[in-house]
Figure (tube, rainbow, N blue to C red):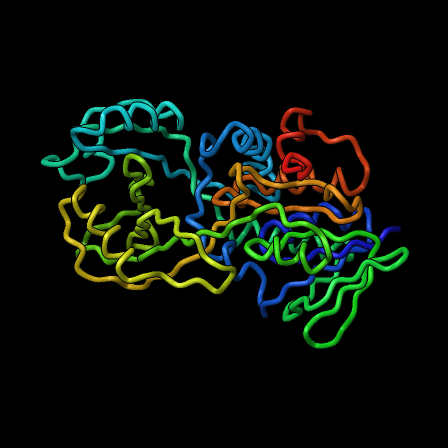
Length: 359
């Protein structure tokens, strides 16, 4: 049985471990003391089937059945609404066509989202089948499956060296431990390019971008539990209910180095001001704020497959903002390719994800 080392314990690495563990000896190395610490722990947690480019949408579609049914499912009803003010008609039409939303009246929008500001919002659209995705449950389901099939999951294992020996890879972690495997899976998120360089391979151009969030209080007696996920036209902000409060994001996308990201006060203030224009309830109190890094390849499509120059080094990176919703299909493809099996995804999608597209 082949030995596979996975670098990265976010949803990409954990789902890959779950897929591969029944067929190989799998060791997952995560640098932090807990799994899903960085981008995977800071997600808006939605399943939006029409979110992303054509290749992302194909992965979403291929992941839907797993999200709905595997281990009892991880989805629950939410709905998605987009709103826009006068002067943004063209952008609004483009966005709702891309996301598959249907136009609704302002009265209908206000019934779904009672804090909508009728003085500023002139256009609205909605789709009912957008759903909350229980990211914690999905992670735990994959972890349980991986461990049940013998995967070794090691946290606090920051990789410091990667060597290609005659027949194996040798990976050293900060505590001096070494791990050897026949293949390596690079699921390191924002650190994917540095990991490739450490292995002596060319980066593919994975760029992390900061995305900030604020959790804001609502007035006493106001419950948002049944409100939809609401997106400002052009993804200028978005919000969703969260345990009696609202999570609001300025939808920022500022380039950043791989790091433990934090929110910028000015970026948050500007995003909250855009949100404030769309609602009647003032933002009076921020309960918490945070940021994560969404890492994209140059074409904003995931990178899944063998490295161009090294057939035993596999990429599972560039998830951007699509990591959770694409994880079932992305991890299955990764597993198929590592194990030399015919992918269940169509050939066009597989080619669009292949790292060799950057050569």
